[in-house]
Image (cartoon, one colour):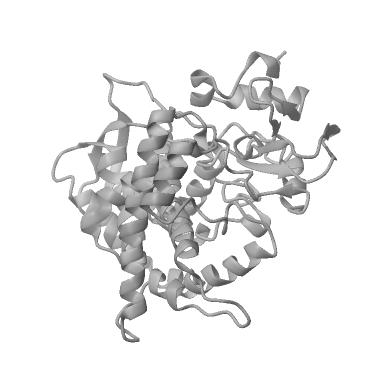
Length: 416
């Protein structure tokens, strides 16, 4: 019998493959208080949904910050930049969250995303073309990072020449969220956040000073957005939202692309299956999101004593809604450990959250993933991992699931 007490989320082996731990929790203790951390882990789909539907009790404000700033980190942010990140979207609750969501909704419109198909497909094609004539690649750096990074840079209206900086800032922003970095690295992260703030403060001022029509991008939409009865977004609010868009626009999409390529390597018939029926690219993307869940879980804080899954949780407790486990809940997803392109309710997973905090960029992310997997199926008849290195190493994090490196070789389809 699986026992949750035999596992720990802070163990590297568990982070690499947490699914036995998840199964043990769902079976033996669906709401589990992990001894090493003191927070509660919610492992079943229905219990996660209960919490997501009740933000008044399961608060997002401050609950996402599992690592507190040191005095030195606070000093660097205050003296060098614009201070620590303002609570706007991910770390906020209504009614304040509602205000910010209104502003972002005006920039991240369905109309903007719906017209992006040829543009996204060209970026994918161009990125693959950069590999040249060789029949191998390191998926993370050569393919999965550039695609979403180019797209988010373009959408924010900033130069692709600065993508290296964007990636460095994005990685730095998510490191503290995993709760596993050293104090020294936290100081380095603070300095990188100051760089980010100054860079985008300059871009904000450019749009504030420009004549109407000069810029057509999401950053300009945010700067110019107005909501009746509300003050326009100030610098600190804009910088907070931009950092979240930068992270959400590349980190999780990159990780899902790499996870999908790994699944294609491990399921060799899938490339031809998608090639023969292009509609299956979308279904494959949904199953990758469900099975691998690039955001494994997010934190909440209880505002009162509450009972969830038969467990009493005191006021002020930190609760981790474990999407990676909920997405494999056998009650919701039959044969949940296996990939099934014919699965009913294939979009029911929680990879993008749910409720008021559902990912605002989910439409764009879904299109990027669908077009990427469709493109690979059209270009390649076979793909496999490097036979000399079958190991897969993951970035250490309590929050995100991402592969560090994936070397593959492939066979291209013959033209015509």
